[in-house]
Length: 573
Image 1 (cartoon, rainbow, N blue to C red):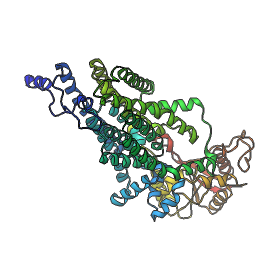
Image 2 (image 1 turned 45 degrees about the vertical axis):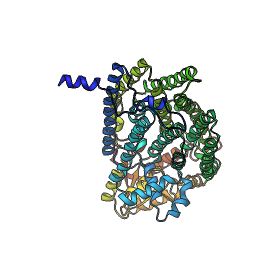
Image 3 (image 1 turned 120 degrees about the vertical axis):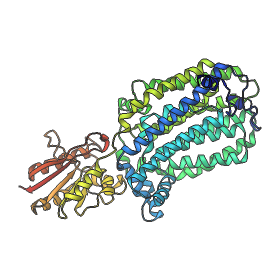
């Protein structure tokens, strides 16, 4: 048995496409030798071990994806918005409300088609996220096997074991499908550069277009890929293919014009009041969280890999620039330019958005950086010590990173569904439910199907999606909570109950009695939600005869949507 195992590690892999297939291939011509028969025994053994680690790594990522699917629970408010938009009665309604949401048209179209085929239960929608995770594993294998002939290591380890991917990448949002598509966009462009053909050009066009139409962040990253591909083609003086590549890039850009106008109007239109400055410390913290767990280690790992891959590519290019074949040069140049161009483009887009840079906003950027770094280090791994260091790093990550990600993987996403079930059972038809704040109304609208009337704080007329324009109108009113106070007063005076989803903040003597219509001379557009919660708490404290906490925030639930349920009884003047 031991002799058989030893023979397994000594025997060369005859079916694998190695790096030499890329190195010996000329752009515009067929790839040459598929197998390097001159490898040393230690390289052959390392290659075998890489296969084992890649399979174990893929299985580990798949295991974490399945655990996340079974533990995530109900959809939180952003996911509920995606589903409720996609399932509007007519597709024309989807298009009409598209400018209120955060994704281009292809993503709600995919969700609409999926829910039509498989239903809109929590299990079905969680399986949607699982499918995106499995597709990402497939995309990583496709890139490594089709371009370098190696197995996926860095890409799967850096992204597949990242809590940001294991949560946001599996939401019913565009981040998961956007991650898959940006990896495929990079891979298919690289394959086109190695051997330009009409069919590959069409594949590149379709994947670019789909990628940009699923996630706005990809609209920033695809130009970096286009720039890198254009440089490689121009080096070969392949002006015909360069022109065709730029033509399909122009087609993608034209399709993006309506979205550019939409983003500009959002930044200067009805929802502009939600933008607020974020301190550098918060921005840095969120960026570090996006790198993965443990947060004290992973940012340094990312920085080291990016610098090593780009620096190594520059060093290698200086040595092989004038040599033939040139395919290795092309791949090194393509990957390095993609990394160098994507980071400032992404940063500029984030500045343009003026939104808090939440960890999920970095997910597709990190996917592209990991894809490019994987390609670069695969080409540089002809240096045995570098290949061994890459293997050791991935092996250590495979063993340790799942433990760091585990607390997030098993965390429930929300408790709104639990509260909704409680209210369906206990709230009477003459009771009133107040959801604090209005944004929780999106998920409450999806899960609550009881007989009691409910309203948000403040009350707006649309609860299927986040309507910041309606919120702004409320902020500009003289007394935006008058309808909520009136409903509470009438319900309590009628000896019925008022249920408060999300609770209310206690009275605060340091808070002014009124902020007045927005913008406030001192606070501008900020502080209104906190003020309204205090106003609600003060009103209940002054006029409620009795109250209690029915459900406290649950343990093991994401703090982003983990709220209490209170009930108030009896009116007093």
